[in-house]
Length: 299
Image (cartoon, rainbow, N blue to C red; front, side, top):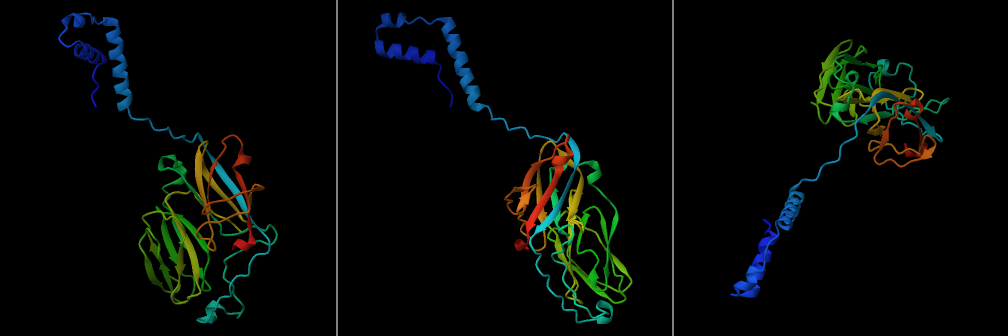
């Protein structure tokens, strides 16, 4: 709304108050200095009213470091389900032993938890050049009617070679959320390829329709900021942005909505859907390590 200069208001008020008395009107003599001050004040108010508020500047990373850690279980690990191997047993179970699903795999010595998935979320322009654009052909094999890698990771720019090292056929079925679904027969001793086009938020199931007890998980990411914990529960992600807050998310097949640890670096924590925020330190590597303890009852 356009403002009416104060000087005009003063003149109109004086004229109305005096009616036709021109003598009173003549007594209102504007002072140039005061008029200029009023104009400047009004102009400042208008500029303040129309100026857009400035957005806060996002803190950006200063360097790149390695994020390391280890997942350990607290308590007795749960028993894994027994698999019902009822077909092609000469290949799938030649020794007729009890086969368990590798859901919760714990190293008895270190108490480390295998196949915990760690994913780091950062803006695209924060990604280190060495952490994106990989073009390798990565191998995903199946042998003795089991997927060799129960949890497998790759970048969306890579090509997946699905191998079948068994002498019998397998059917590899994948139903990702952001990529094309696939359901192909892979004859014994052969392979096929799958080319993703986008990163996935979480790992997705891979199954075999011929041998329904077979199950694995594949994680496809848009960059290399992910890790799958090894036999002793340890993980490592290189070239992660430091000096600015990053989002970290942890997934496990028994806790697909997010892992809930008991402590991290000895301190009680509460992660929401397996997510937490941290700022890596470019000057002190010890501050970039996570010792995560998960209670056995949560699996």
